[in-house]
Length: 417
Picture 1: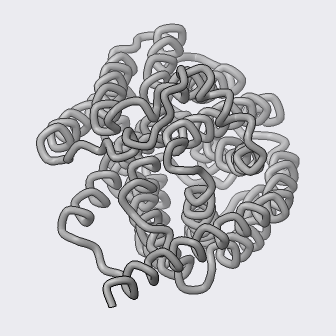
Picture 2: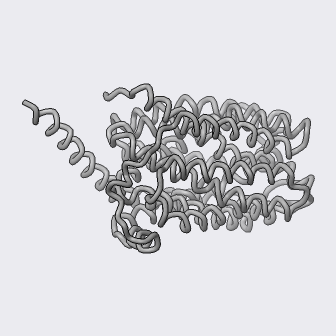
Picture 3: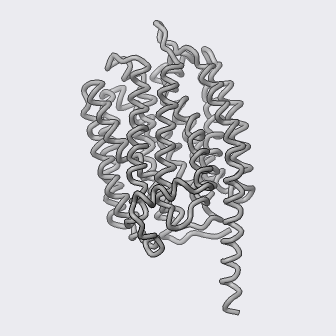
């Protein structure tokens, strides 16, 4: 199996830590849900809007950026949007009411929502198809790391210093990450040599019109549904429906996150060794079973809550790592930035719709319990089932590109002889 250079290892670690700050900023809203519902005096539909408005603004920003995404050095583009993300996070920390927080989440989404697509474009530029499962497996552990380190610390700060404190923490960490990127990341501009000279709007339209790209976009829309529907209300559901106190909630997130951090790289290696589509299907099957169990739980001992969460996130990691690796094989070199930006945009927009729909399905009763969660589970499981069929053509495209890449590498080795 190919090995990584020291610089490649640095890039992987840097992107993982970068994603950690972005993911934490988004996922922190879920465990803070119980605090916001209480302190801001808002209802579940308003909280769903706070979550979804980030996704909507990120989606719009992704579409606006897509035409320009392949026209600049990816390092410069990354730094520009990361600075905006830090500003948005600071505004969240300074929010004093629902409307200010809503505006702050719009700003954060406009900048933060594009960063993931730039990161994945960097991965496709610097790493071959053969090892992308391993790379994605490490980078995607940012989600798990936020569970292990970020969410428990964020909940601790929220419990002792108010819900604003976690956002101050994220902004501080993000500043350090930004300095590291500016200092040590080399320019990433090889794509500029093959990038077409058409104007940004035509480049965007050309990217969105290609048939095989459209299959990737369609799959992305449904892939986002599960996470955006379940995640926003997970803390409130765990506290009010499952009977886990706010003080014990960090333990659930921490154990779940540790297991996911271990499983992420393992899923990446399995994806490269056994096949990315095989791992995706296995993860989807497990995920459907666990969603069905999770959404129908009542008052539950904390040990069983942890077991269910660990298995559910194992399935999520399998799906995230394998699907990211598969879709990374779709775009041509000159379209990578635009493809990733449109993909991210559609992911955020569909996620925003999913969060809003979830907020309409789920209703909080007078005693705090969330009603209609089993209905939400059926919707999520249906979307997961459909993605199995939608990912198959993408799998075939990936395998064709992998065969071509392997043939080219073999020809390079044989040529000198």
